[in-house]
Length: 110
Image (cartoon, one colour):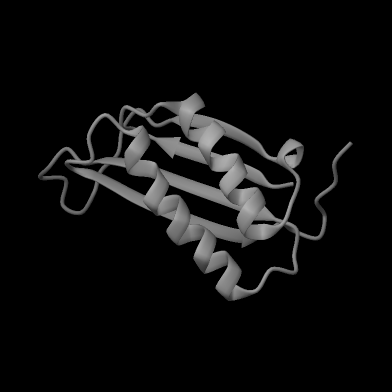
């Protein structure tokens, strides 16, 4: 925990983003740096709206152990949205989104 997944179709400095994201998560939700794990999934094709433009997307999902308030999750979402543009070549035509959610009770690690 936290389990972080980034789906992206825009040019993204993945390593730089993860290395900046992890301390931000630690500070916001009171976890340990070594607990942060980020994986990236490049999306080959996206269609936004009616498909008339070639929009790119970056969607960050952060799954945490239950117990954080809605306010803490919202604060983390806003902070991640603020961080993302610094790690993109351009933000023109790029749709950014973040979801912070609780891990399912079945979550286990070793």
